[in-house]
Length: 271
Image 1 (cartoon, one colour):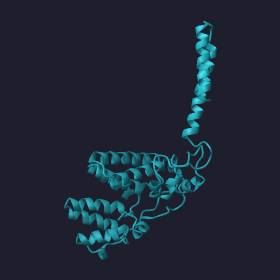
Image 2 (cartoon, helix red, strand yellow; image 1 turned 120 degrees about the horizontal axis):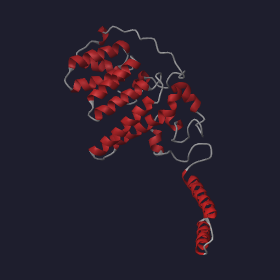
Image 3 (tube, one colour; image 1 turned 30 degrees about the horizontal axis):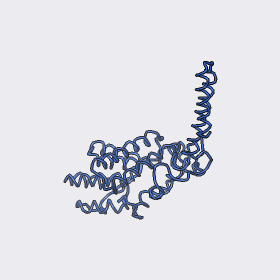
Image 4 (cartoon, helix red, strand yellow; image 1 turned 45 degrees about the vertical axis):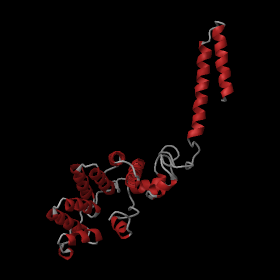
């Protein structure tokens, strides 16, 4: 509906009021028509109702999206809709890997975006703290809205622990790293990140013990080997531990695209 048509309706209503004629039914009909026209105009301008990807990512640039994991391009609300309307044609692949937690993974994608902004922006400490706080909340949301067997949970927990450290919340950081180790004992970043914290606190004995525990489960981690040597330990003396049996899957049936060991060897930034 054009502005001219809307003005015509308003003028007609004003005329009916001036002549004293009853116009309540007409008024309700006209308001409904105007509201529907306004909503339709807004829909056409601000959304992408046709199936398929949006013309631009929602809430981020193409450059920012290119720096995020592959699944973020298929996550809800970035280029596509949810599981009910306009899902990505690759959504089934990710649901097979992550379970229904994939429909909350967009919060993990947003969190990574906020952390990158905090680490690269030249803003004030208050702005960076704000971004880390937003990331923390999105990490928590992604975890709380995923199943217990969510394959990315250890990784998200480590990122959550890092956010807690940036926010000056060491107790919460410790808990996040501990939860990550419980979920996946051979996930080396869950050890190395807290080893870094302990080393910074001059708690070398505790740091060496934790690095040794990590090496028992992940003996090929170059990061843990380097840390253990720096703390006076001999990696060759560490006795390898048996991994506990994995929990029964309830929707996540495939292996993750990139393991921690692969990420380390590729220099993915998790060292």
